[in-house]
Amino acid sequence: FDDPRDFDNNIMSEASKMDAFAQSLECAKPNQDSSRFIIGLDTGFIVYSSSPVRELRRRRVNGIGKAAMYFSSNIVALVGGGKTPLDARNRVNFWDDEREECVMQIEFRTPVLDMGFRRDRFVVCLRDKVFVYRLSDPFELVLLQVLDTCDNAAGVMSLCAHPSHPLLAIPGRQPGHVHVVDLRGDDRLSSTMILAHRHTLAAVALTRGGDKIATASEQGTLIRVFDVISRVQLHEFRRGYTSATVVSLCFNTDGTMLAAGTDFSIHVFSLAAPVVPEDSDSPNSSAGAPAVAAAGAAGSAGAAPDPRASGGLASAPASANAPAAPAAPGAHAQLHAVDAVRAAGPHQAAPGHAAYNFDYPSKMVFFWTSSVGQADRLLMVRDDFTWREFAVTPRMHVLGFGRLVKTDPTALFRL
Image 1: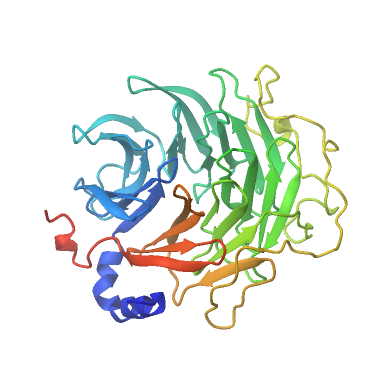
Image 2: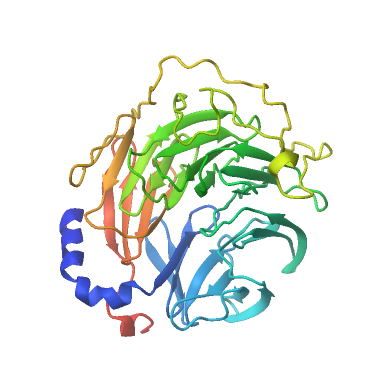
């Protein structure tokens, strides 16, 4: 197909054939530098390169519900899922792809909702707790701390893989609060709390450098960006005026653009200029005031700011580093480099961001990639096994699209 719309129509016409098979894609997740990504299936997992999208290896190990790669190494963390799970959903299996076997397991009392690697840390997210492990060489795990959260049914968390900024963002004990933890050190971890929304968090994302964090609530109308150190709100973007489920947030490589996705659209926002905060879903009554709270007031037990942590998170009072007064109420940052591609139905791209809408709802995972000498690109993987690659600068347009696997499930692992 020359046009992705024709590609969509073809998928719609094959819905009856795809229906049973499409349900078997359980998860998709990039590695730490987005050079590769992994998808979990009802029958195993497949690893792809991101640019170009190309299959690297596949393994048949029964159903995979959650998967996380350790950079581009042979180690993959797997949690069972699907109709015939690899293992119980409360158990993490560490798969060594060179030996083609599980070499270690960690078991929890409740199902694992998300997990992630840094070079020296491994983090597991449950519904009301987050476990932080020290990762050493040879491959060994030592539990460092258990952090409490509010009810986190969506498994919301973000782990920064930058070697100099070991940050973890998770929900706080109160709905709408973001708990940012500095993972430096092996004893008491320093942390801070950001009052981001009135409603429960639906998604969070840290920049690759760990200097900014984006948040969205279950209401799904507003997306906010905060400075991690000062905890000051830098931007506020309106995705729309009707509620929607924000399934993912991610920054581009240098943190100048933010992509937000619902189950039927992708929105790209520019971070070139500050945006005036709106009152809706805001925990603060005065526009432009820093959204901060002392970590000890609503954070996890034992996670008070540690002054001994060199370069750790700030614990400044609420008045520190307050942003300048807004210039015009209700203004939105203009997205100069990205234009709207198309809009399906009555929905149109709002001022200040570009949007790409889909003809039918689907779950998706997307992330930014970039190649040497090329602009940032946005790669999207959907639960119908299709992928799209978008060029975002100077215009947002589809570079490529295709299917990850064949529609015939019996041919999935045929050599």
